[in-house]
Image (cartoon, rainbow, N blue to C red; front, side, top):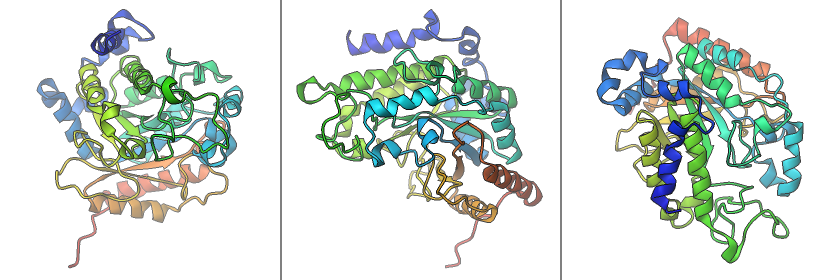
Amino acid sequence: MKRRSFLQSLAGLAITGGLARTSEAAEATSVPSYLKNYADRFATDPRGAARQWFREAKFGLFLHYGLYSLLRGHEWVQLRERIPVAEYAKLKDRFTAEKFDADFITDLALAAEMRYVNITTRHHDSFCLFATQQTDFHSVNSPARRDLVGELADACRKKGLGLCLYYSHGRDWRHPHAPNNDSWRGSARPKYDSPDPAYAYGQDHDLQKYLDFMTAQITELLTNYGPIAAIWLDGIAVPLSGDRTKFKCQELYDHIHRLQPQVLVSYKQGLLDTEDFFAPEHKAVDNPSGKPMEICSTLQEKSWGYNAQARHISTDEAWAKLVAASTAGANLLLNTGPLPDGSIPQEHVRVLHELGQRIRAEGGPAPVEDGN
């Protein structure tokens, strides 16, 4: 199938059905609930309305949850401990998510005065928290039997929160045709002692198959779950380590905007400079363009997924992150790593409630002025 025909067939999922819920696909053409206060601008400039909303949103909740959570170590545990692909895949049979509660999560975000939520739909291990036809490595095909993205999408829509979707793009530790270490750096694959049989090598490796897999999954995310606020791509170190044009990212960005014109696209500090906003980790980056920026940081030191060994930061430390983001003219995307059962750590619940109380009392953190 030619590339253009492939993309057209993916876009057609919204019409032909696939996994799509038709009512949600129809909602994507009306004013999304999170943009209800921007309806006039949305009518003529959907992405402009979304950018304005994003600049004014200021504060969002990030969720890193997946199979790695079961090991209570770190979201990069597969790479750091060099767990073979087949061995790591066995974690799917233990994934229950019995205490993942989208209503609780969205209520918590609102209590913290947050305006949007971002969830790891698929992290570097390639396990998906949504129903997908592209692989059987997903939460609906686990003991959980649940589409966690769908549950969160419903809760966000009902409560007027924007839903942003994290998606690991440049880095994948399972797909046979994702970038390999022989051609790419940036932790493209775990450094196994011997080649993992799950991966394709040499002339058998075809990066295009991986690109098509990602395009198909992002199409599912943008046709099955109603209006989406942002597609938040990760794994930028891999394409930055070689010829980034091989990833055909502009084609993907254009495809995203055709499916849902209001969707904002980010790729960390920026891969092509055509992204809608910058999304650096922990601190601001130079921004001569003046485009929106969001700093992501986390409620556990040096860990995004739940880590039983990592220190939980205090409310004052979290407030300092809000102040730093405000000073940089950026949003703050503050991360929590749910426990193995999907519940939010009580330390994080307390901090988020206290942040919300302080924001309501003080009107949000004031930027720190440069004294020079």
